[in-house]
Length: 78
Image (cartoon, rainbow, N blue to C red; front, side, top):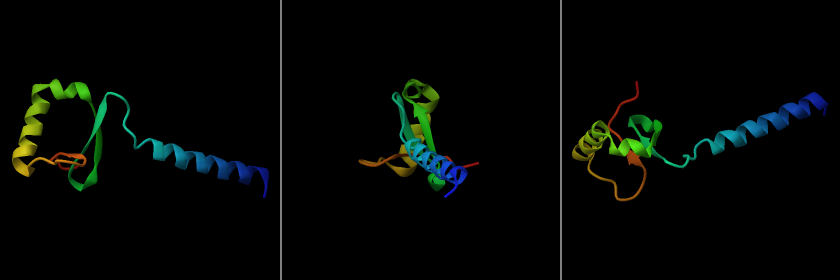
């Protein structure tokens, strides 16, 4: 195997590993899943914002609450 091919394989593996880690949320954030499985990472401070609270209340009225599992939003992907 040539040296350049070996470097390409290593770089490819590192990219794959890095992309797997990107699915974790960072401190101070939580994940919300919209229609179609689109994932949004939202800062926790948004929970104190009145508009965001209304959005969550609308989602609860429309879809109910989820006792365990990811947060979901009725928002459609654009």
